[in-house]
Each structure stands twice: as structure tokens, then as C-alpha cells.
Length: 234
Image 1 (spheres, rainbow, N blue to C red):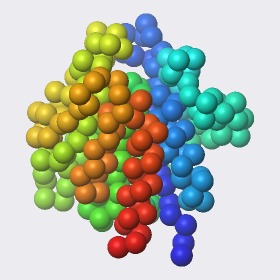
Image 2 (cartoon, rainbow, N blue to C red):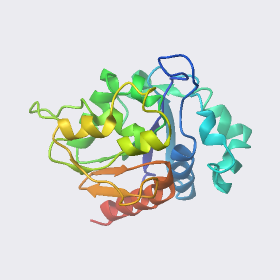
Image 3 (cartoon, one colour):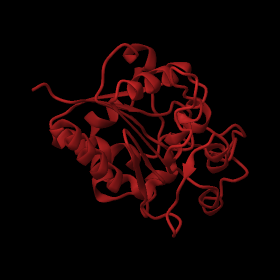
Image 4 (tube, rainbow, N blue to C red):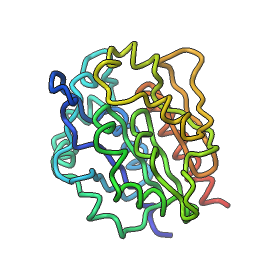
């Protein structure tokens, strides 16, 4: 049997629109899925809208946010080099994957929602019966994805993503370009969140898997690997 192929998509955006603060990828939201897929021997491709450098949000590197495994990858020069030379979405658009995973970080709020290549990739992936997963602000990449019949992918889907109260806790309400939670609800998503903010929460709705926040990274990786295995066994 061929190895499963995983595509992880991350942001190229390094600053908020105000220019006052740095942003980028929330590192643990990529490392946990990467580590889990690597342990299974899966083929992993890391891409971004433009390709090249994936900047890392400095907040995600603070000691209280950096778990041991993510720190190990941060200190791994080979892995960090992968984030310097990601493939562009145009380069992978015609490739086939068993999982398309949208990593988070506030940077995604700028370059994920309106990226037509990402929309095409996600729509085709989902409609072919394959898995789509998104965590935290990576969920922004699902907002405008339409299916072949013109309906929004997220309409009627049970899902989660970083919520507005969590933006308040993160002190980013005045920096972010929009309210992700409200945007999901406006598009007909059945939005769910953890009872306690900033705790792990993962939602599975068929081939769509979403995680709420950075603290969901570890659980998200476990759930995604489990669901991939279940699909293989069907």
C-alpha cells in the first residue's frame, strides 16, 4: 500500500495590518500534526500561499506556550529549513493528498480567506471524499470555499475555531481584521466551542475536522490520525 500523503498549509504573513505586531504561524499547530504523520511514515508536504518563508509568530515561542516536542522541532535545523522553503499552493494544486491540513496563527487571517488556489484545493479535496482539517485561525481558509453546487462547504457543518472571547484573552481584538467566530456563524456553520476558553476542543463532522485553539494541537493530531486510520480500514 502506498504511503498516505499529507499536505500542511501555513501562512506567509508576518505582520498584522497595523504593522505594530509580528504574527505568522503558531508553531505547535504545525509541529504536532507533522510529528504524528512522520511517526506513521506518511509523506508530508509543507506549503503556503506564495511558497518560501513561513514566518513564526513570536508569541508561540514563549516558554509557557512552547511544549517539549515543539521545542525539539524549533531546535531542529532540518525541520526549520522546511519552513524557509515551503512549496507554493500553485505548485501542489494538481497533486493528490489524503489529508489537507490548514495550520493556524493570526497570519492566516490575511492570506487564507481569499486565496483562490486554497479554495480550489480544499473544495476538490472535500468533494473527492478525502479529509480536510483546520485548526484555530487556519479555519479562516474554509470561510469562502464553495462546493460544485455553489453552496459553502461550511454551511450546516458542525465545527470550531478560535473564538471571539479567546481573541480578547489574547489581546488581539483590535488587531485582527475580522471576528472568525461570527464569520463562521454568518455562513451557516454550527459553531461549537469548549466550555472553558483556551482548552483543547476538536470537532469531527464527516471528512471535516476542526480544532479550536493552540491548546488543541496535540488532541487534533491524535484525532486526525485516528480518522485517517478509520478511513483506511473501511
